[in-house]
Length: 385
Ligand SMILES: Cc1cc2nc3c(=O)[nH]c(=O)nc-3n(C[C@H](O)[C@H](O)[C@H](O)COP(=O)(O)OP(=O)(O)OC[C@H]3O[C@@H](n4cnc5c(N)ncnc54)[C@H](O)[C@@H]3O)c2cc1C
Image 1: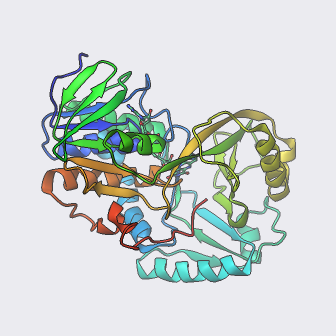
Image 2: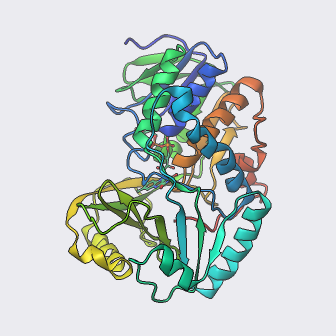
């Protein structure tokens, strides 16, 4: 398909954020939506490399509220878009090993209850009943929420791509945006490797590259890439089908069932900012050693695959969502800091409302506006893995 000369809205990036935004803009009647993705496939960067976890258990009200709106959209996804997305409610089990985490999680569980999320507080004996395969050495307590779980990121992206196209949006691969034309303080168009497109609205949905795209519009967006790795094992018949998404919180170490094996990840707290996506073998050894300690049956597992991807990290681990005040017509949907896949559905809708209706109204997103950093309104999300 040729690049059109004009568009009402240009979205840069075809991961979950861009494709959800394109679908929701088209659904709300926006006629001339154009999404540009520089890779040859949609959703193969952060979205395709993610662990697929979806949860209500967060440490700030705004994140719980995003989940309260977004996860039901995943429930309705197949009905609405005709695309199965492998939804599996296995629950998330957080294992807490420090007194500080126990105190913070107690407060967070109270807040979750207030918002209607019925997270359970578990003592070690109860945890042992839920996950007999886990070594509970050092575990002081846990939290479990049965309606947390997993969904398939690639299917979600494909569902939004097909849905947006059915509604008339144009979504193109192999098109890289190299510059954004800004004149008189407002967006005029984008420059790409295949020509220019005139547009009054640009949505930055470039994930880990959101900062680079911000620079194209002369805006300093505090979103940086940080490498995170995953290992998937071969079949492990000992792991029951209802094995939950287990997170050893203090170690940022997690496991869940993936096919017939186990998927595990562990965040390196010393990982520098950067775009390197090669697997760090040294860190993988540290990770696997910690993983085998917590889940001893991993000692018998074979490696099926491993990869590295990039988190798109903001200073307070919350997204930057909405208009960018310095440049009229420039919007951002980025900086989700390791838990964006699950909030893609609602954030695409909220951004579509922000663009078309002047302000998001399904949820007040002003706490997520970029000006929070100048105005000292950052919110710390403790529950980042
Ligand atoms: C290892 C790992 C595990 C994770 N686990 C989870 C999890 O369990 N649950 C969860 O909710 N989240 C998880 N996340 C986070 C989640 O993946 C991200 O928050 C989310 O996918 C971000 O989506 P996105 O669309 O913003 O970014 P992306 O999917 O990266 O999409 C951005 C797109 O923009 C394109 N692009 C960039 N620059 C340009 C340009 N100049 N021109 C054209 N195209 C451009 C890129 O090619 C890319 O496809 C994880 C992330 C990683 C790396």
